[in-house]
Image 1 (cartoon, rainbow, N blue to C red):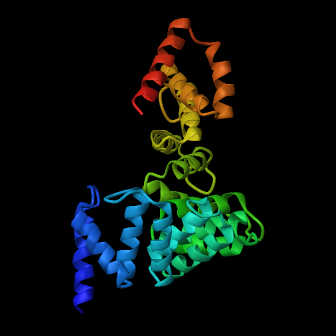
Image 2 (image 1 turned 90 degrees about the horizontal axis):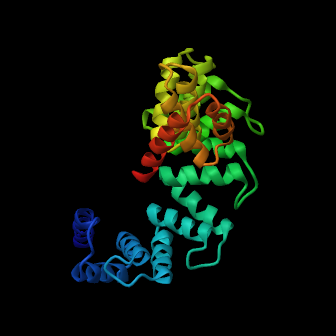
Length: 288
């Protein structure tokens, strides 16, 4: 009981100082509790070693702490151990080990691990490609409100996949959930659906709003579509400078459609307008 209370107080203290440097007293306490085999302390000590917070950064020690904590059932440590194996941080890259630990974390209900496991199954990494399994794990994560999972699930339904027929209505549902959380990719895709009335209400103004959200979040396709709206008065009053601004920003990110549109769009602008558009785009990039 005393150990449980100690760990609880330690966890609360860690939350209070997580944005600051861990002090030596707390590190010593973590090391002491870790030596007793407590999975929470091992996980927190692993984070300290991984980031160099309060200790000398040491990938191998971080790995050892995460491994011990993961083997004791800590879901966060299992997820981090999966990331270490997937990326080869301090150990040899091993996608088979990565997916094993992501699965263990996912089975405990960790939404990030569920999403990552879904991605690996959808992409055939660490295990044979399994779209049905990917959908299962994406849904578990998406139902917990994880926006990336909602977006990836929407994309699978939008395009269809092996054994999964395309379903625009289901796609729009998941895109809407993610867009509500300001997910840029989901906002763009839902915007396209509203622009053409695909499984949702046809609404140019709603499409424009969603493209704005996507562009503000850094999505290149959203920037391209927003520029196109300003160029062609789709859901908004025509504005040549704003059109150039967003097409240029998308083109800077190698968005092919925007690059092609910009070439044609320039021909109808004066040198002064082009210069102003270039400045708007450059100023935006400088503020990033």
